[in-house]
Image 1: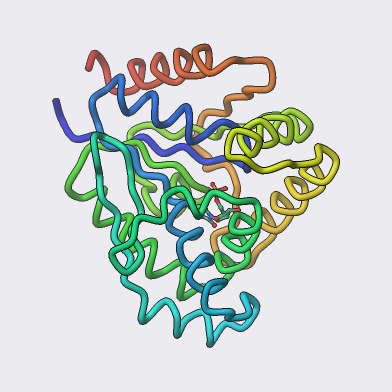
Image 2: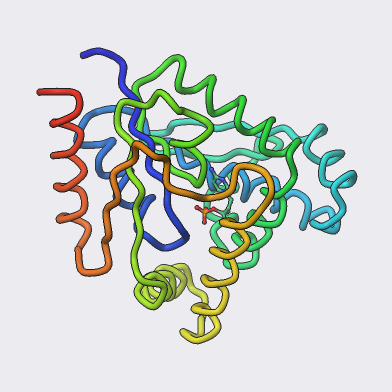
Length: 225
Ligand code: DC
């Protein structure tokens, strides 16, 4: 099989990670969750009580940071200073923090270089906000995954409950809307659909339907795999 890259971008809660992970499994290729990398930077800053709005301080943390992305049984694991923080970075607070540090150009550059390096070596499905537009502009398949904000908030609530949090739907909806606005309006590499990306609305789709739709798009683009 020739090396391929599938770029999946979209707002928080559009189903990107679950769908991307399933597609990667189906195609026996790697899944890279780039949001987790921004979350790791935010997590480290929060642990060090560094203000996420203080660019210089965040960059100082970034420069000292020992971040490793490992694949364990096909699953991406994030290690900070040798400690597995994969689960710890999944909170709402770290998610908003990730959106904050993602505004900083130096953070985007450093993580973006790591992401491009991964794509040089492997066939992969990579999800994020700027994969089709900036990180992998030559990706064979580009998908922009979207869903109504209310539906995305409902999904986030479900995920957070599973993780032991006790979220309030209205609060989560406001957080989802705020994060979208910030991700879409930041100066560097904002979230937007690449011109050659295919728009997939998952509001009324379940995971299986969305996966099937993207696998079909992939087949149409790159032929039998
Ligand atoms: O996908 P997520 O919720 O884990 O992402 C957390 C934040 O990280 C998101 O709100 C914006 C930022 N991010 C980004 O700016 N670029 C990416 N490629 C991935 C995530």
